[in-house]
Amino acid sequence: MRRLLILFFALLPTACGPELYTVDVTGDRRIDAGYRPGETWRTKFDGVLIQDKPDSRWELWTEADLAGQQPARRENVPAGSTLRFVRLSYLFNSEHPPVEGGTPEMIDALAELTYPDGRRRDGEVVVLPRRENARRIIGTSLLIYPPNETFLERVEAGK
Image (tube, rainbow, N blue to C red; front, side, top):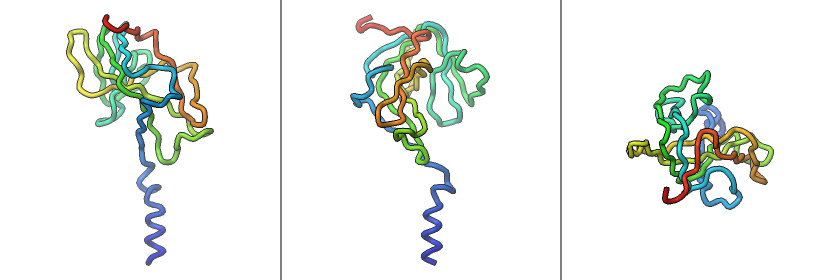
């Protein structure tokens, strides 16, 4: 009986699927590129907030990013909306930890979204970077991408 219980608990994570973890890396000094907490950026043209399944996080995409995708939910984001970045994090699952040589994981930038009419959206949204010229953080499989300056423009403090 004891062997059966040990086998059951050993196989339980596999049977239930991998666990998903979120790690906040806002203060990590190795992250010296991409969007930064405290910065404000403005959309140059309309964007789209998407959720790939109910109760998942909202992500800000461009229509070009969305081509061919069928998200569970979507909301339009008008040009002139602002994003104030509040934190950086990454997701990984228990089968693929972010170790050197492991599955690449993108660092996410989370922001508070304010529409041009001044309304603030509840909760944080993940803002997609430009998906090129990634830099790997030494000793990990984490990737830092530069901001998407085609879609967003940086707003200087006080403007």
